[in-house]
Amino acid sequence: TDSLTGYMVGDHGTILKYDQNPMAIRNAPAVPPAGPELLANYPNPFNPETEFGIRIAEFGLVDVAIYDLMGRKVETLLSRNMAPGDYRLRWNGNDARGNPAASGVYIYRLRQGSTVLARKMMLMR
Image 1: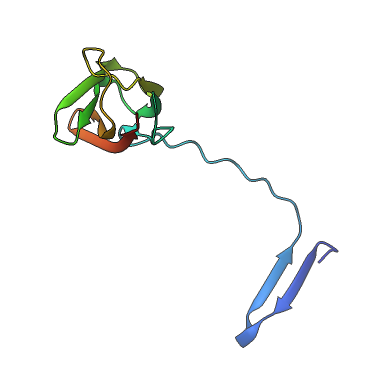
Image 2: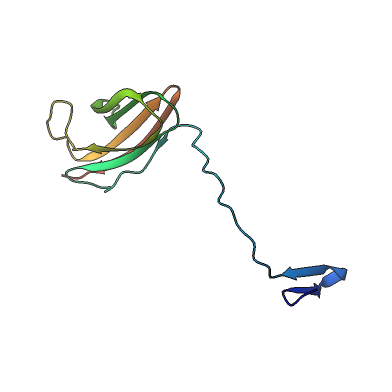
């Protein structure tokens, strides 16, 4: 042994080797998400606008829309083919006609292929 190595005897005859030699730690390669991700909005509650992130794992048609709690579509934020990547979307609190939406809880929903993800947010006028 050298001055960087030591041994200890533990319970039931266990022998532990202590080695102080430096070793390199490699970063694991980033694992791409298996499917799309819908991130939390900020701020929440919000007035007059909020933003949130989406993460797209593979190229394809992506739809992101806002719904009220009755299931009625309030606004479409995105409906197009998207390349893989991270994106930020913003909702200004208005409906599709440009009118201010009422205070309340809304659902923002992402759909890509057979995957549908949804989260809640609260607009406080």
